[in-house]
Each structure stands twice: as structure tokens, then as C-alpha cells.
Image (tube, rainbow, N blue to C red; front, side, top):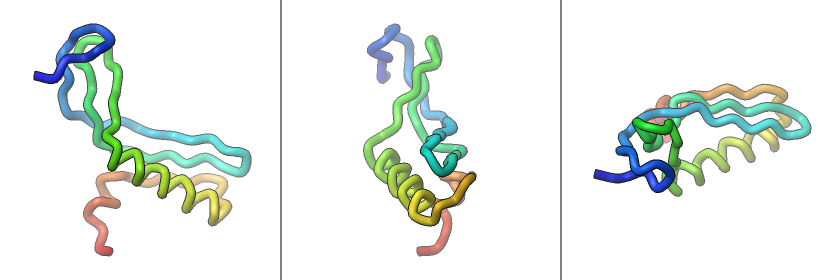
Length: 80
């Protein structure tokens, strides 16, 4: 069992929504895999997932999108 360092509660697999508001737009990524504390609700995103989130945000910034909404789960199943 993985314990929450904040409250000592149990962490379980879950999903979260990640959003970034930068000067020219907003990026929202839904269904991002994470660990969630069942007691306090704190969320942890693994480093490989965080790296992919950074790539998504930089891509949207480079394209100068005002609003970009994507589902992380759909990105994982998309052909490369």
C-alpha cells in the first residue's frame, strides 16, 4: 500500500484534469492518469506523464491556440 505523505491515507489509481493558463491561451488535458489519496484528495502525477503534459502544452503554445482541450487517454491510444 502506498501511503500519502500529507495525511497518511491510502493512494489509489485515478484520473485528474490538468490545466495551464499562459499569456496567449489555455490548455486543458482531461483524464490524466495519477495517484489520488482517498482521504485528502491530493494527486500525484508520475514523471513520464508530466513529461507528456509538458509536450502537449508546448505544442499548443507553438501553435498559438487560444484554447486546447484534449484527453490524455485518447493520446495514449492514438497511432504514432
